[in-house]
Amino acid sequence: MAEWKMLTLVGEDRSGIVARLTDALFRGGWNLGEASMIRLGGNFTIMMMISGSGDVQPVVEPVAQEMGLHLHIDEISGGLHQHLVPNVQVRVTGADRAGIVAQVTGVLAESGFNILELESDVAGSASKPVYIMNIQGYADTTLEAIEAALNELGDIDVSVSSIETLIG
Amino acid sequence: MAVLEILTIPDERLKRVSQPVEVFDDELRAFIDDLEETRLDGPAAVGIAAPQVGREQRILIMDVSNTRKPVPNHGYLVLINPEITHWDGYEMGREGCLSVPDYTGNVIRATHIKVKAQDPHGQPLEYEMEGYEARALQHEMDHLDGMLFIDRVVSRRTDLFRRKVYQKGGKG
Ligand SMILES: [Zn+2]
Image (cartoon, rainbow over all chains, first blue to last red; front, side):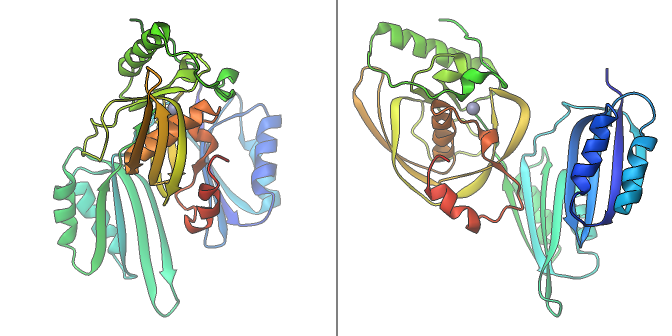
């Protein structure tokens, strides 16, 4: 069974980061698993599962240096094919204020909602920022129960809907 | 009746364009029974298309009457030589596939569809479908054209508006 590591790299966005990194990994004999790479606030962030043998540090470190990225390597348990399919989606829109994420996710946690994916962004303008969050997760509770709990939060718009994944 | 073997990626046969059905006989109808038995055998699939079991003919089965939250539907449908004659609207939804184990992704599909097809005796059929049922039809019809949902997966950050042109263009 493959042993997996999680690579985390963060740095100022510039072209060629993904190409350089994956080329080095490929040449070093490392395999890629699941990965998430996204630009956040002008930075490029990478979280990537890799498997292989030996020490990956000397393979990745030169790329991190060259591209100006912070590098972090973790041994992880678990592996591929452990997907959980989300069945509930929560969309939140509200004035950008401290604590909005903590409040919403706190309520969700109490409702037994397991967050699988969370994307948030700040829309609007600098003077009138609007926080938008999109959460997909898994819950055994009813949509109504989750919605009722979130509605107690007041000045934010929340919509809770089911995700019916179509298998065909 | 028999449960047939489902082809899974990267089987090249899933990429072939299926041929129209010309003979509506007992053999065809026996195959449709097997196809339905195959659909019901695995994970809860709302549809299945003949090329998924290696029969490259324009035959599909769908049934979205058993969703967790009821959706508008026409029940159990066998559609042969289906053709979409009209589509409108678009939305994103999550899909998986019997032929793509252990992966789901977001796909943009038309929300309103008119479809013409034939039944297992060759008689003409016509339906208007919306939402989840329309999505199921488009997913299955893609199989008939050698397309998989993984060819259409988009990020949830994808701007729906900019995708409009693509969706209106039908199969890409
Ligand atoms: Zn499929």
